[in-house]
Length: 158
Ligand code: SF4
Ligand code: SF4
Image (tube, rainbow, N blue to C red):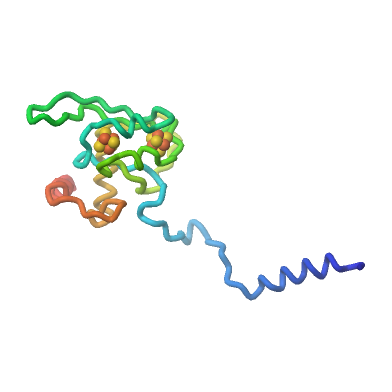
């Protein structure tokens, strides 16, 4: 029937007039983002044993872990580095870590046009993790509270 398509289209428009809008006026408005959303990767040295499971789980080979034996039988973490230039934020490293030492979360606002700064070494990752803990009331993305010695260390740094 002539005009049926127009009527159907108008009916869809009419139905949506009375529904709440879903549009967020970014950047004036920011949608709430869960603390453990896959926005970034945060590595917490105090939780890491240097087991390298994360590095083995990463399909892109982004993670480098170098360790040496410590006197107490554990491992010194000499290097821990993530190459965010090739990371696809799949989260497999976070799922593989038995100690929740690398977790999904953290800011999504650290965009940069400096490509090389996306290679983060142990020092840069620790700075990022401490900033995250300070901003989140010393809570890890998984909801656990950071230990007192880490809180004291971060407070001394600021
Ligand atoms: S998020 Fe995926 S690609 Fe990125 S470091 Fe982890 S495992 Fe590798
Ligand atoms: S982040 Fe987790 S999986 Fe990776 S070396 Fe540390 S403890 Fe092992």
